Figure 1 (cartoon, rainbow, N blue to C red):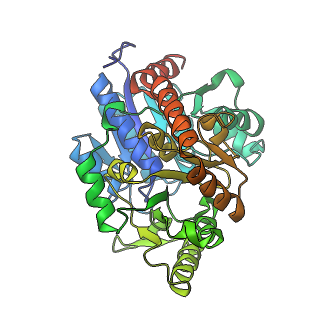
Figure 2: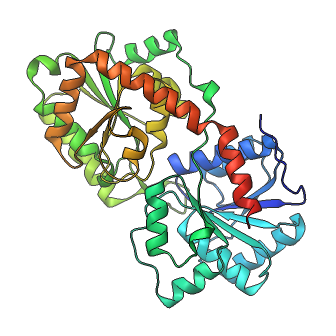
Amino acid sequence: MFLFTYFQAMNLLHFICSDAFGGMELYIKELIAQQVKAGYTIVVLTKRNTRLAKELHELNIPIYFIPNKASKFSLPLLFTINNIVKKENITHIHTHNNIDIWMASWFKFVFNKKIVHLNSTYMMMQKNKHQWHYKFLYHFVDGMSSTSAMTNKSIEKNIPIQQHKISLIPYGRSIQQFVAHEPLRNKIRNQYQAQDKMVIAMLSRLDQEKGNLEFAQAFLKLPKSIQEQVQFWIIGEPTMAYLDANGQAVYEAQSQVIENAITNIVQLNHLENKIIRIPFQKEYIAYLDAIDVFILPSYNEMYSLSLLDAMLMKKPIIGTNTGGTPEQLGEGERGTLIVARNVDAIAQAVEAIIANKKDAIEKANQAYAWAIQTHAWDTTLRKYEAFYQAN
């Protein structure tokens, strides 16, 4: 395991203001755990009563909580951050959400201009942020990172931050976790009567931009003979907007529209055993093992963790030719690239894989070798060390 070698006096505050627990939060949790294992001194500032807070607590990560109803200009929040910085001798703040940037930059302006503020983004920067208030905000950001070369180009274009402060840091993965387990694979497949089926699955929250609806619609485009051979799995839950006063999830309206539309497709066409809805799975690797083909039909994915994990499970991949997905699939040598927002393209890609399984397996093997070479945690932690050291 890589050991942290940069100056040991560095104390890191991860700041993540998020109610949800999806791919981003899951990755941040793993990043923090890996950094602690590598020797970093870390505390976390997050929201109370969230799944992320619970899971970090289970890992014995020191946690502080954002004051209730704190806004990005909240004075109680600024005093909370200041108290943490003083108590824990914090030298670096690492933010992960857009609202986190506001809070950390405002704190730096008011209380401590010497503290280092670094931000990692997990989405494309499509909005031009060169207005005066954004220039003020990003003046107090000392470095930004993303996992995608395309995203870094969008940062250069749309964010008022100098190019030399932008870093490309690949997602880290614990390669040793991605192993096949035949008994568990069979148990999961038996649960959904998929023993003799080819399972094509997507793993994401339900969201218009994720292409869940197009994926479900594509089943209806398949010839009847192929419909009998396959199952479509949609693994994930609606996009959460916030937690209510009782700690219950309130979902985004657009996400519920997608969920209802998929339910209607299933019910109207009697596809209860063909299009399977599965909730978010904490032990998701077992479900990746249980499937046969992974699909990412997103409209504009920055750089997909679930696709990367499917590669590590040696699954053939179908992905849309947008965002950072071509960086992951190359020019098609590591998977099948299709047009986004196109139901027919999804159906045709499924048919092509069924018709040429040997080619799909060869691409899956190439993807596996590439993922191991570029996304092991040792590689990622070294890049984070350079990111911190440069600032």
